[in-house]
Image 1 (cartoon, rainbow, N blue to C red):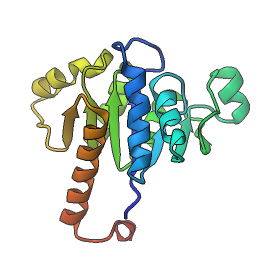
Image 2 (image 1 turned 135 degrees about the vertical axis):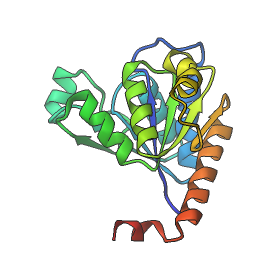
Image 3 (image 1 turned 180 degrees about the vertical axis):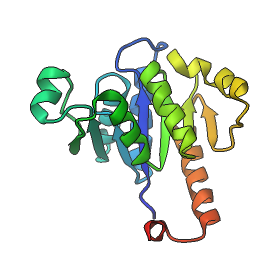
Length: 191
């Protein structure tokens, strides 16, 4: 089975609806149970809860840090190192890290969020990534439908659901359909 890389994007602070962190945990768990690799921005809040979920079932969790080093990650940015198998220190601050995170993923799942999450969503959208939106989690997630409507760009590669398991299944289904359309095995796309 192809091992997809799925990023979870969301609030580092708790501006979310009640239960959003629990749902983020379940999204991470479902990503791991589907034999996919979880990628996050190596931060607290929604990303950390999703890493905890992935690790609860032995999944792989990779974090992309805005910091240049582990020392800066912990001391300057005050970010965690727990629950991640690998942290890549990008040195590109938040906006650069956001772009690298979305571009290194096959799909992005948006949960709750603020302006950084919106940045990750729009980057994924423009890069034609599959995007899953976990609804009823609050924050910027509640505005994505109207943003798409006002942008008049469609929502062909975007799926919505309020259930973590169903959302992850929908995202993976779209990834598989996308692979069939491209026709070549994923490893050949780089050549």
